Amino acid sequence: MTTPSQTVGPYLAIGLPWPDGSAVVEEGVPGAVWIRGTVFDGAGAPVPDALIETWQADPEGRFDHPDDPRGRFPGFRGFGRCPTEPDGTYGIRTLLPGVVPGRDGRKQAPHIDVSVFGRGMLNRVVTRIYFPENAEANAADEVLSSVPAERRDTLIATKTEDGYRFDVHLQGEGETVFFDV
Image 1 (cartoon, one colour):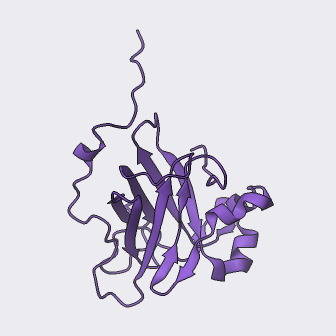
Image 2: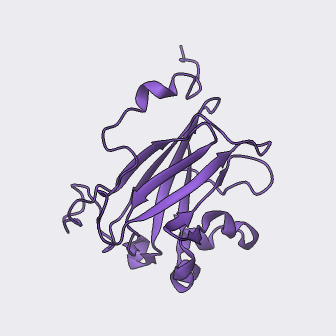
Image 3: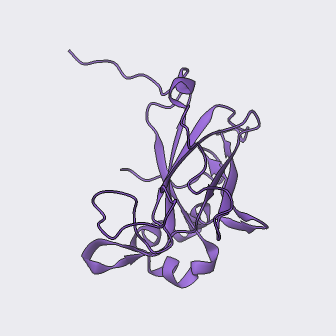
C-alpha cells in the first residue's frame, strides 16, 4: 500500500524555528550582503507563509560540509533559512559565493542554491541565484547555459544598496526557472 502524498503545509511553521535563521554569517562580518526578495504565487500575489532555504559555497568556493576537506571561511555556515513575512518578503544575510567545481573539471559560476517550500506545494522547488557582475562566468556556467536564453534573467539577482534582490515567482508570468533535482 502506498502512502498518499501530502502538501508541505499547513503546518510548515512547526519546522521553521532554527536558531541561526536567516544569518549565514554573523552581523558585522566584512563583505556581508543581504539577499532580499518577495515570493509570489501564480496570480502575482505575495506568499505570506513560504520558507526560503539557501545553501552555498564561501567566497573561496568551499562548502561548510565534511565532504569538502578544504575548510571554510570562519563564521560562515553556508546554510540559511527564512520564512516569508506577511507581505511575502524574505531576507538572508550572507557572503557572496566563489566559483565552485563542476563536472569534468569545469567551473560553476558563483551562485546560491535556493529551496522554496510553501502551503499547497507537494514538494519544494529548487532554483539558483546568480550575480550580474559575473557575466563571463555566468555565460560559461553549464547549468545557467542549459536554461533558455529568454528565461535566464529569472535566475540573476539585481544589485541593491546593501546586497541583491531576488524575487521568486512560483507560477505565471515571469515564473522563476526551477530545476528537477
